[in-house]
Amino acid sequence: MTITNRIARWGGARLSRRMARSLPWLGAVIAVATAASTIRRKGVISGTLDTGLNSVPFVGAAKNAVELMRGRDFFPDRFGPGLNRPRYQPRDPVTRRHPQPAADLQHRDSSRSGTDLE
Image 1 (tube, one colour):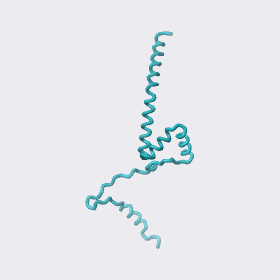
Image 2 (tube, rainbow, N blue to C red):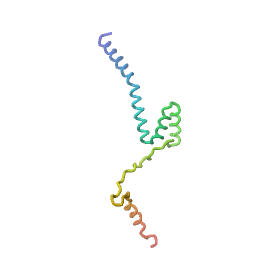
Image 3 (cartoon, one colour):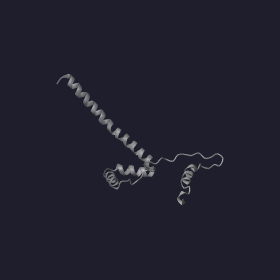
Image 4 (cartoon, rainbow, N blue to C red):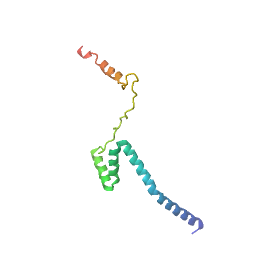
């Protein structure tokens, strides 16, 4: 065996040992990031229960299989798909009330202009 091959093997073995030491940390970072996003999406209690059940080996797999067959989650998201989160609407400084969507109501009323009776 030449010196170049020995150096390459030694370097590869050292690199694989270093990667093996850092792999559990990488898995923990991914698990914490997944738990944080689930809790943010589903809420504190539902997200914690969902993450807890998913972390138990066979229970999490069974829960995911049942959810796949049902077509929906046991713990649904706070905001469904395609729905926007409610945005803050400032109050009117004079009346101290939130603005009403009057333009939308007028549009619905104008579509019923009494043409049904003609």
